[in-house]
Amino acid sequence: MIRAEGVAEVTDADFEAEVLGAGLPVLLEFTADWCGPCRQLAPVLSAIAREEAGRLKVVQIDADTNPETVTRYGVLSMPTLMVFRSGEPVRSMVGARPKRRLLEELADVLEPARA
Image (cartoon, rainbow, N blue to C red):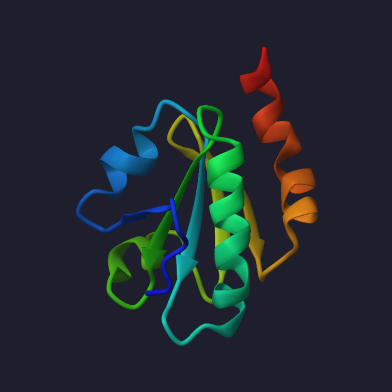
């Protein structure tokens, strides 16, 4: 799996505790070693994880080795980004994007955490 520095890896086994049970909104990337756009997204996710620490939890799951979670959420393309809040998926995005655009897409998820 392409590891983004500072981004935790989750698995089928700990998905419920780490993502659904998280106290913060969670940005989850479904990734795979063979995925070129995932490589492009790795530094973006690292930067967001660092800059939004305390407001957003950023994690990755290897789609090839965690089929249960992939199937559960109907993931068909890599990278797929999903945002979870209070254990529920609230947004899904497919494909790599620049940091600024991704932050714009996450603004309404992050905004309540600022209060």
